[in-house]
Image (cartoon, rainbow, N blue to C red; front, side):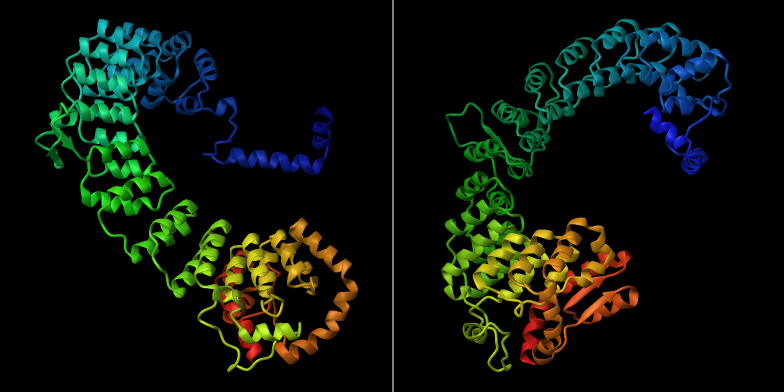
Length: 585
């Protein structure tokens, strides 16, 4: 390490750069990384914010001049827990502490050092009820006992509320016995939220404040079934909210030793959304719901992953599940990649879909979902309508059987059949998603060839630096392409794997590429017109790309790289039609 240091330090250029950077950091007044010299430290605030307590101790000892503010003294009380260090700082700044006297005990109680609290008490500093509140919130029982024994400020309702929220049952017991401030419904509400069952039981048995309907909502939201059952079976909500509870009805079950059933608007929704099956089951089994809410929540549940909850809600839903609902939730399940929900919808609600509806689902699945779901939807569509598995261009199928050359058809004979999928469009969607599995699946189903797919698909994969997909396209579809222009791009040069692959391909296929150059002009002029290639160097080139269609693009300006990819991506599906139009010419 020493050797490396001296090698760097003795290099004039590197040493100059390093010290210029150090000076730059120090020149920035508010930089976190700024390095101060001892004599440059002028404020106590800086020392407190950066917790330089030993440096502060030294500066007090040497009587270094510092600007002192009320906030810096508060920070010391909140942060310094070592009583000896605190005493040293306090004695050095005694005049300032006594001048401000800004309830320092309140802040020290939050820090948790009983010795510091005792020291400030001995110095006759004042406090407020916040002292007990802060100690209760943090769970410092020893400080609470000291304050109750030695001071008279008392506490507010927040003390028990905050101790209950954090599960400090011993502190709640102590405050209940020795203070008169009481608490609010927030105490039990927050105990329910945080799952402190023993605390809920204690508050119910020993205090009268009770809770609000928020307690039920919290139990549903965070999955505390034991607390939910306790609130319900002990009539806690009804006892405390009888006059204000909106959804309150009588129980018809004479076997129950409680007579009230109470419902919250959000409880069931929270439980469903967060996947708490046991709570959902308990609510439904005990009929703690409004029927209209269950109908709505059932539909919403189809958007989430817990299928058991979906099945449970379906049993209690009374609203007919129409075909429109089926398609709506099927689309949502596709976009959220919920394969179990998709299978459930098809198995449970056997709506007969039209070929048009199935085609739309297939395209949605290739655009928005994973391969497993796309394959699932595709297979269902083909099973219902076998013609979807056929080539969409009947004349193209005939041409393939006769020759491997590109088809030449008139507009009257070359058309898409509405009872078939547009496999080119499907393929381009898979390219847009950069999804190798979908691309391979579609290729194997339809055996697409280079004259079916516009070369822009290959360019798009190369410039997205997707090497697996690029290899697949080159090996199976674009078996004769010239990588020379791609190798010129600075974007490709920065990607070592892609550049290496293209360069190796070029070297391995040198003779093949030479023949391709000789044949290319004739083939394109006869059947495809001329292959259009654009090199994007500046904004004018980018505008041209936006206005026209090309068979190949090359990014020569790194600043335009992302914009070019976005532009091509937005037009990629249109390229699936363009090759068809060229064939017609």
